[in-house]
Image (cartoon, rainbow, N blue to C red; front, side, top):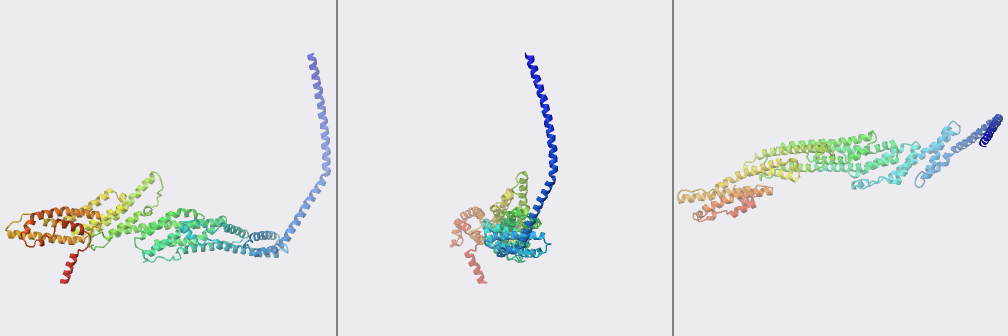
Length: 612
């Protein structure tokens, strides 16, 4: 049964496949028939389609021509229709209406220009351009009045107080930008010069407030206060320049686009920057010869260090701005070079100071005081290392920076030591002028001690080194011992105790002579050395102690040896016993090295004058 069912099923499948083949053939015949008919239909309607497309294009062209004609006819009358809005200008609340009228007029001019060959167009085009010119002039006038009315007048004061600077408020800036774009679109460029002139005038007013109206050269004999005043004016001007330039650049960029903003900004600031540079050069090149000029230059250099990095990011577009920045950098280098020249001249003047007049009290010489005052002030100035030895960045890190700082310290040490060496050698020459060698030693001791103390107070000892200090201290001690040996050897010799031989009369005379000799020497020493000076209190105290350590024991031994004998040799012992140990201590502590003339010395001098 199974094979029969399979055979039956196979036969059914075969018949189904034959039927499908017949249907496929019939369908193919039908489709070929339809394609043939559609081709015949397409051929029959192609002419109709072509005519319909042509009619559509013709209709569109007619419509466009009609629209262009209507637009052209309207453009012929545009200048008359917008004239009223334009004549009212953009002032007040009229800006939007004014700008709309200008846009309409610009579109009209563009269309009329395209049809300038038509007979009725040239007159209308000329009239439209005339109205456009009036519109641009109104724009420029409103631009100028807006910029002038809304420019801050207290910018210089704001800059000096360190307050945030606003040159023109935001609302006015937006209005200026719209007006500028309108004029640029209209081909009007005159307003850029208006902007430049107004902003330049604003700069002039700012610098007028700080005194830069007087930019004349520093004369050859300018006094220190005149130069200082000019430096102060210049410093204020540079500070304002640093604060204002960035804001003025932002304003130009807000009002103008791209290269136009760069060009306008450059023209605006050029006169001011040139004046500041010129004024700085006049100060640097002035013939004012005082060494105080060094500190004016250091202040200028320090200001440059503070502002140049900021100005570099502002004066960075275009050759004109880069030239201005280059001039400022050159001026900075000129201040450093002139400062180095002054320091060299200062060292030479110290070493070669010709003054040979002795100071009667042996105190610190004015040359020493002036030199050390100059050096202390110099070492405290932050710009001193950079000015003298280059502009290495102290913020660098690493071994190279440490090596650079070490080298810088050595260079500064050598320069300061060179000046001090010249000073000490000059002082040695001045000390030789003194006829009184004890006073000469006091003079040298005072001056060397003053040098050491001044360097200690200026924290420069680390720069000079402990070995330098030890050498100078040894000099001070040597001069102190030299003074003590010269001034007090005769006094101690007069107090020497020795045997007095001979008869009673001869012995009495010898003892009296001993007392007279000591009294005379002591009186002369008292009178003379009270007029001398030792300004350093510690040094003065140590010298007085050394005097008393030798004088008092010698005097006491002298008195023990001869006092009892002397009382028996005269009826007037007070004539010989003028001093006691207590009195010697008192006069040494009270009178010696106080730079004053004693009253009895004045009387003695007056008596001598009266006798003459």
